[in-house]
Image (cartoon, rainbow, N blue to C red; front, side, top):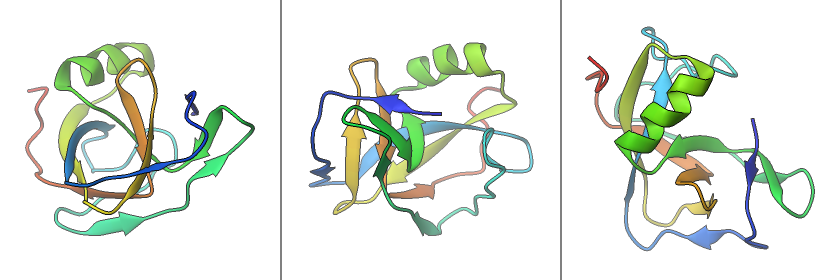
Length: 113
């Protein structure tokens, strides 16, 4: 999965950013089977494939509506609330998707049910 952006460099979050992520019922991500635990901040590097594509990082949607739209393409079991902590590096695209170097699962409540 890649995020295509016009941003040349990541931005730094001045405050927490709320976002939404598609997960399986066992709280693993769809693409890499990464397991999420509520309240734990996970860290990753942001890696670009080329000048526009962000390949590595934690991917999410900036709104519940966008997560649902994203999910209908990929298929999913649940949509969960996350936050990108202040101080994190992130990239956005023009469609409401975001990739960050830090992310935390806020709640185990499935917002899709």
